[in-house]
Amino acid sequence: MTVDAVRVELGARAYEVRIGPGLIARAGSEIAPLLRRPKVAILTDETVAGLHLDPFRQALAEAGIASSALALPAGEATKGWPQFARAVEWLLEEKVERRDVVVALGGGVIGDLAGFAAAVLRRGVRFVQVPTTLLAQVDSSVGGKTGINTAQGKNLVGAFHQPSLVLADIGVLETLPPRDFRAGYGEVVKYGLLGDVDFYEWLEEAGPRLATDAEARQRAVRRSVEMKAEIVARDETEEGDRALLNLGHTFCHALEKATGYSDRLLHGEGVAIGCALAFELSQRLGLCAQEAPSRLRAHLRAMGMKVDLRDIPGDLPSAEALLALMAQDKKVVDGKLRFILARGIGQAFVADDVPGDVVHTLLEDAIASR
Ligand code: NAD
Ligand code: GLY
Image (cartoon, rainbow, N blue to C red; front, side, top):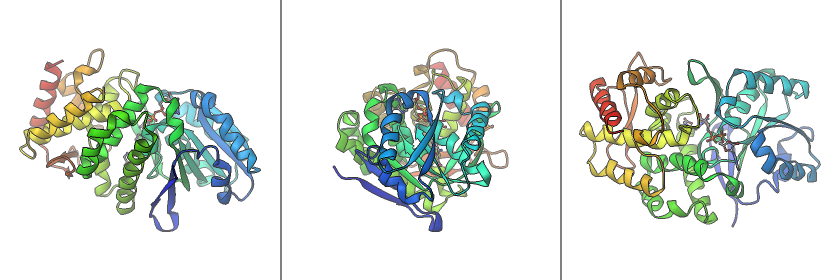
């Protein structure tokens, strides 16, 4: 299998997302052209460090690149002020200079945190994303959204800071626990739902074998990245179309907050449930046929994914409380909730005028069916 390259066209800040097997093993030669001196600082998490840090550093060493690494605890709780401060101070102690490159080796948590650290360190240093989860390969490593969570909500503090290169080694996904793989699939299916019905149809057939079929996995990652790259090139800072990438996310962010960003609900699981709710909402508003949410639910079930609120263990707040959490969402404009709705599979659009009572009833019904 060869390596695919998808370019994110952002003028002087354009970069490539390289997707394929063996990219960790050749990381040194991939990254070397970016370096002004043969040295990088790597941020990772403890789980990824145990599995992939040594081969990664070895590959750098083979190209004559020295490296130092900091492994933070694995998990969403790391993406907050304390570990962020620790990472930034470590980068300063490592004497990372303005012209150096920081490497994020890990999933979306490490990518978002390391990207934000690179954005603020010495007013901005370059960084390379080496995403190791399916979610990070298809979504979080591309497009330059970086940041951390605070007590007030998710991703409320951050910066747009584009990586200089993304190396998505599809081989590293083989060590990913099945639950994390399925969670990442929530973001993959999102791309089909938002803008490519042919891709969605292919996923209905190929989805169940992505974890074991490397060729299919590479195709799924490539198509997802192509779609994201195209949207980001059109609307880097989310003035318009980029909001489409948030299909399912208004619901997802409220559910993640309600479950305390815990193991009860992973981000990609929340995205899948959120997509199912967004299609249900679209159907209730008369925008799409009943077939669309039913078909989506059937596919998510076939993939062994969480689909409905009843799939989230433990108690959930009332419909009112969930609506209040949605109002905290960054996508609130002039106090109005913005939803991504759909006229059918592959036909999403941004809606700013969704009646609150319809959303409320939808949530009440979803809670009642638990
Ligand atoms: P994660 O980074 O926590 O990774 C999930 C788990 O998998 C962790 O325990 C990690 O240690 C482990 N892991 C990572 N790679 C592994 C591998 N190859 N083998 C075995 N274990 C591995 O979570 P995630 O799902 O990758 O990312 C979620 C985060 O991404 C959330 O914070 C979300 O907000 C963010 N996100 C950001 C964007 C963006 O555009 N910046 C987009 C989507 C999601
Ligand atoms: N994951 C949403 C975005 O990158 O805009």
